[in-house]
Length: 300
Length: 263
Image 1 (cartoon, one colour):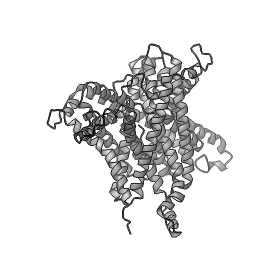
Image 2 (cartoon, each protein chain N blue to C red):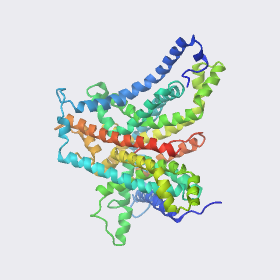
Image 3 (cartoon, rainbow over the protein chains, first blue to last red):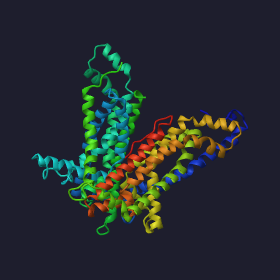
Image 4 (spheres, one colour):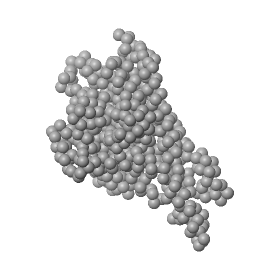
């Protein structure tokens, strides 16, 4: 594909002009790259590098070793578990909802309203979402009180501030994300494949098991990975529900607390925590990218 | 021939709808209970009348507008050049688009504070505001870029540019009188998502000690009972407005608008 506009590439005198024009194009993108480097790339890289340096700028693995404390390990495990659970449950429910509005032959207005609502709901996270769930399943919440009035008392065995409380709050923004990404994928399942399968005598279950799900699998796995990353990186929601103490259970809150604690500051620890998060997120998003590319082969 | 909806579809729809709407209903109902035994909008009046609400809202609103402007100024030329002249950069940009997800908000603000420690950027109000806005631009960048890139691809920017140039247009004319009018809808869609993100953002604003809307909401939860619910409903309404307007505008788009948000 010609890099320059017009037919000058064929003329020998074009080369100096081509080079001149290309340099204008590069100039056009320099501000953008400078910005990204200054506000994202350089700080992130700096943290990764600092993780392996001690106070005296000497290389060390001590910061990583410092991660081997019970409350940090348990925090990572807790966050991983929370992210995995909400990704799987949110993913499953989201997929079923996406199925319902695409292949379920529901009235057309339902599809567009659910998609719009999903767009809103996936952005409705953080503090307001925490408030909403406090009003729903908190101690004074609507569901809590309604269940109490018919004799079922969910407290104290359940608490909004515990694992499952956090999980059902997270799922609120996981489901819409799944719906938004899987609805187009389900749309891309060609009608002809279904008809061909039925012509050959396949039942609905067989169609799903042998054709539809294998085709959808990369998209499903990739999006679930994205959901995992989404939950893992969440901070505001957990902060609002658990209060954000330094002994708190989610890694993102631990990292935030590193910035606020001026006593016993082990700066290397904060770097190592952030580094650990970057590693996990890179694996997750890497998985998502690979899966997405695989999915694009079938689902254009 | 229209096929009848399967009962399973209705079931999953019902479950999904319940999950979505019950919390909203509960919050709305809770927010109306400020006055004992009577449904009233007292909580809303308290919230909307408080100067702290107004100040933090305006602060975040201004920051959102600033973020959108800076984001657009950086991304529109970049997307344009990548589309037109530098297709080799496309994979690089795609990679950069994923970075804000790989480096979540809390890690980003941690990295920014640690990296620019002891520089004017972290020592002054103005400095931390620059960090805040810069971080928000980075948060908005995947959505802005995708929106503008989709818009440019669907209007076939290359052909338009060539046509304009063959009629004698210079770069200024091309950018401002040919390209921009055709992509301003994509720009708007990116702008609305950015607006929703900035208005609701908490992590970065609170760790940079900025008087933004997110930290204000959190502060209110420790002192008031019913006002936080009113705020949640207001915030939801605001997000709905932003995304709703986005939908209205993006229906006029030739391509498909991205409305995927992160938490």
